[in-house]
Image 1 (cartoon, one colour):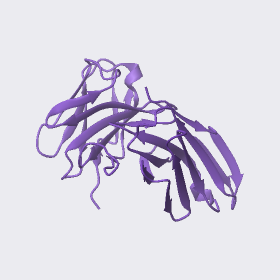
Image 2 (tube, rainbow over the protein chains, first blue to last red; image 1 turned 120 degrees about the vertical axis):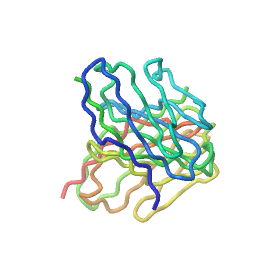
Image 3 (tube, rainbow over the protein chains, first blue to last red; image 1 turned 90 degrees about the horizontal axis):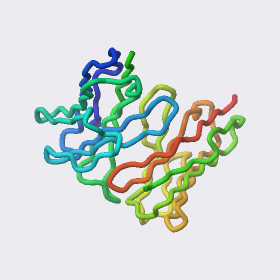
Image 4 (cartoon, rainbow over the protein chains, first blue to last red; image 1 turned 30 degrees about the horizontal axis):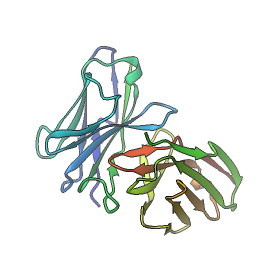
Length: 116
Length: 109
């Protein structure tokens, strides 16, 4: 069964460094998403992406964050200058079409980011 | 802004007991509602998806109901087992998923 994959599973970085989290969505999916979960808190929406453009973003997704689809298979989240509070689990998701009653998002296993 | 609340925050039951997990949401303009399971430090496993036009969805020992007009969903797990111990999250879907904080379930052997 097709699945969303994410690499790395765990990333440790120093404060102020740039990190890139990678995701490979399901191959025929057109809509891509990033969520994050700070330890002990709710899963929060960051951004949705379609047709090489951001379609929606939350207030969390500030200028420190960017997303890209650099080729036909990868979808990346970049954090330019990491802060301690960026430590979280980051989940990638994808869907065939825009969300509706008939479309479901499929989640990857997550990347745990630890900022020291 | 959509707010999703899950009650209780934690639940401990003996093996064999039925579980009832509650989810409420403030904006009924949703496409569907999804229940997930999350084990400690792990990802999200989708359990059930209820479309907005549906009242109920079943998968094995799991049954979820949806009352959009009152902004409520309930997840029932029949005959609980120690392997059901996990955090259960509900998420309502419009252009994104809005998650509740979860109910952490412990099933005692």
